[in-house]
Image 1 (cartoon, rainbow over the protein chains, first blue to last red):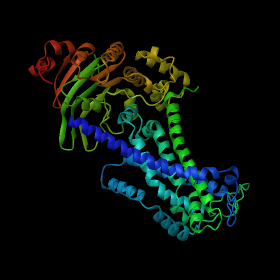
Image 2 (cartoon, rainbow over the protein chains, first blue to last red):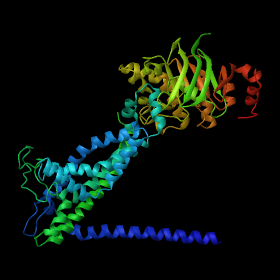
Image 3 (cartoon, chains in turn brown, red):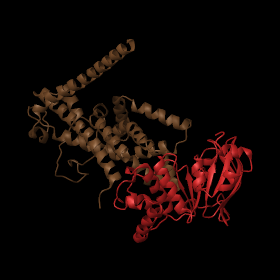
Length: 297
Length: 251
């Protein structure tokens, strides 16, 4: 009878702890959404932010966040993919590999403000890139690489060894086996990994304050010339993102509607990240079904 | 009867540990040879020497000769792709790739550089028929091979191995992960195919060996104890230890 009672107590405690976690999460996200969503409007999304008056929007910050994310993924994905393939398929179990793994672990737990200051010294000052989107994207690459690499490595390692052997037995070289069999099999996991890390990158502020800068330059969305200083595609212009904007209006903002702007921006950030997460799941499932069922033709 | 493959004094060691102590065995053409013996006796290791699947293991050292149609497969400058086209393999666990059935079976041909769509179509159909899985897949060729049952997956894998028209097919316990009905279907498939191909099969199932094989080789502790025609091995083995094993007195 005693073990039965203990079992009931343990179950109760576990439910209680889970309840606390859920309550916290729902509380935080609910609070952000409830205080922010009412202020979200088409006007807010599509107008430029204002420096002194109330009623500014976050059009440029939203675009900058997405643009930085895309650039960061463009730079970090090939590197992470290569590193992950090496670690999962080629690396022998020796001290060099151990060192790489330890480095990745340390890098992934590096505070993002440190990444930001490092990026400031290296890219902004040393390389003379100035406060710019490209400096921000490079700093975010440093921030993103470790997580992305281990996510992709896990996905590749999840492919059963028998699949590789079956490839070799058909006369495929190691590389052809990886490209033709292992990577397609790992693709859904890789996509999920990419999008989850994208959520982290999207919400990052500290690494960008000293690299991409805090000011938005005048941006012309009809100018498609990447090299023109006013073009929205110019990677050398400074660019404030959503997360940095929240930080800035709260620390040094002099607009009268600070609370409204930061609440609405926070809500938008959370919503976009939630969309990423659900998108990751949907895209992963869709890709998996497509790769596996292949009902097309 | 000609021997399509011959193993001559094959020794294999990992570092200092010798796993195979010099195995010499001939494989007659268009026959099914069963390799039997207790777990860990080296029969799978030996099988994997026959298409050089052991090459990439660390610290491995293989000596002796393995002749395929009279030529040593461990010679320098051997084309591994060509070897594995001639010596196909089916594993213990069904290993369909996460693609449609059609692409699975066509994979080996495409790797070998076959571009002719008609030829591929024809080979895919022929191979699936030979592996006795055509009726179950002909309306679902674009369905993912991993969605089929275990026994069906294994026959798709056999079809995939047959698609490149190998001389020899190595089978590493091909039915041990399957239920009795699927196993029986695979056995039947093999019985039908052995007039066309040479099979070398590792199996733990002695009844299976007695049903489908023409020749049996009994291995123990990395040595070939005895080999001979199946009937002779089961009814009148030369060595007592063989008789003991085959009668289930150990193993």
